Length: 230
Image (cartoon, rainbow, N blue to C red; front, top):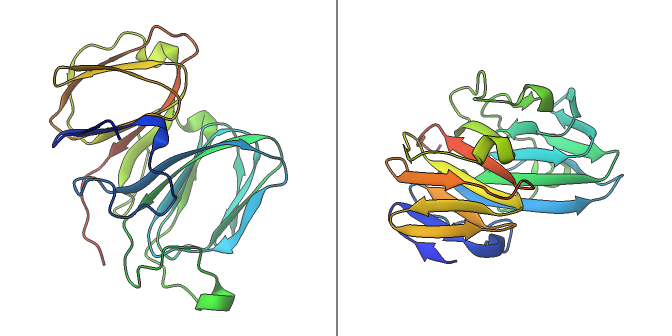
């Protein structure tokens, strides 16, 4: 970690080192993990399972398929997948791929791992998951529902961030750099964020963001707000 401020947190080289980092992220965000997984290989995937929390994926490269309960969807670059607590899900990749993951705080029995029907019994669903295809993931999620904690999660390139003016955030906003250098100015700090550096910014924070590197690739998450745990 580089900076932990009441209004923002900056982590270098994705220093949240394990997938189940409950308690590391500030309590003002719904995120319990924000991770980048590069260099995925064809044929990789995960078994059907569910969680005691919500999980979201953003596939920034690659092609494959994902199943939410009994429904199949295609995975293409920039595809967003939301699986609420209790949703049985799995994915299978057909090509090289790059993935990113968010999890929320643990609820119910607070078991921090994959749960299966065979070992852990049938889940109690909390809602329906959804998939936003890559070619349609270009702005806010059309209908995220009541439970999904975010309103937007997508890939950003040079044209998106090359020259942004000062913005006072109306919702929590989070960035993870995949490649290149992204400049962030906030509270008198002028920072150059490199690959796998992460910035969590609280609503009400004023920030400037810009890029001079035409190879910049970053992902942005915008939260809807806090929700009641069950």
